[in-house]
Length: 277
Image (tube, rainbow, N blue to C red; front, top):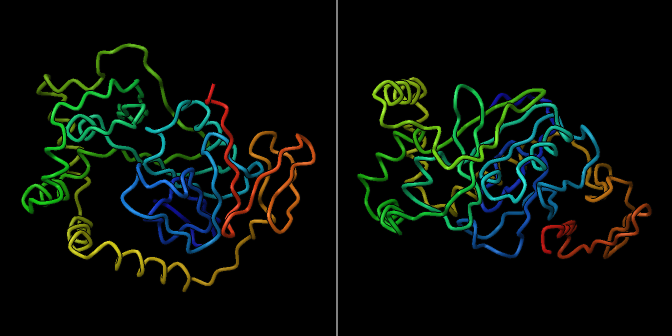
């Protein structure tokens, strides 16, 4: 990620493993760990909010990290429009179609491919051809884990953007990823191998360290940066109308749409539920 030294950075879906460089964290499910690998980390300013309805004013941030969120949402158009509204640059990461088919997550709504520099989304039919087989191998088999780490680019879509996000949502069921074509497979593997660097060594080393230790180290590094940033009070806006909100001891209030949002355990809870109908 090309994050500059003075960038003010938001991370959406930070969950149990936020990036060290993130200044503000945002997660939709503070108290529900079903869709992540552990308890949420709140070691810096944090809000509970839906990425499709971000509680920030336009261009509040310089850079936005959106890792493993796009595949979850109900409306990817809405999420992408919010990313562009809140920051001029950012990074999106999702499982690739290969990763989705091999592992399978029942709570993923979209399958994502990166085709010629464009994000291509399709509705996920939520087939789990291999059940829990590869999840179990990733947890217990060191040889599969090593293969996954050294070929992680096969399993991920990694997309950095500036100004706009090039994407397409397909209605068709047929995959745009043609793995029957030798030329397409060769192109995919060439792209994958060209991205493999010394980073693979650090990924393997990191995988060998208990997650709790990694989390503590990242938290310490984030705090040690000691860089002046904006406070939540300065940057929060109503997630629905984007109007100014006022804060009390236990809640936030939008004077424009008259919505009230609680503050629980010091974390503003700014979720909205427009898809519940």
